[in-house]
Length: 194
Image (cartoon, rainbow, N blue to C red; front, side, top):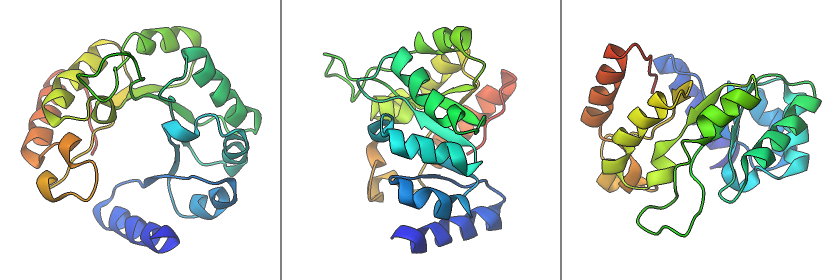
């Protein structure tokens, strides 16, 4: 839905007091999206789109940078450098799983990347177990593992009715699952926002 859809997303975010994070795909869209979105997301498939990274560096909006499916930790850090070089110091790195020879899950969640990244950079590191697993039953245990590995946060997909979701339904948590995850992480001293 393009910019019309972004308008709906921003309206919903303001109504419920939630920050709006949305993916930007093309350098020409960065500044327009940055006018209303609270954070720009650069997805795994665009992690090495250097003109997009450079434009996000000029946007002065926080950037959520997802690791490419076949990218090394060094390549993720170098991609972040493109954003930082543009003057934008608000970069969050996201481990979302990498492609390996394993076929039991969509991707392999590289939780070793979390402490390695924390050692190599000052940037916050979050984990997306939803996109790594591709299956809701695996998301919650991997979220706990991500926090145990030292992640600064997690990002999970939720849907009121995952079986009717137009995309990513199999990996989306139900509201009950999300509330239980949130409650357990809260008891562990971890704050969680949907």
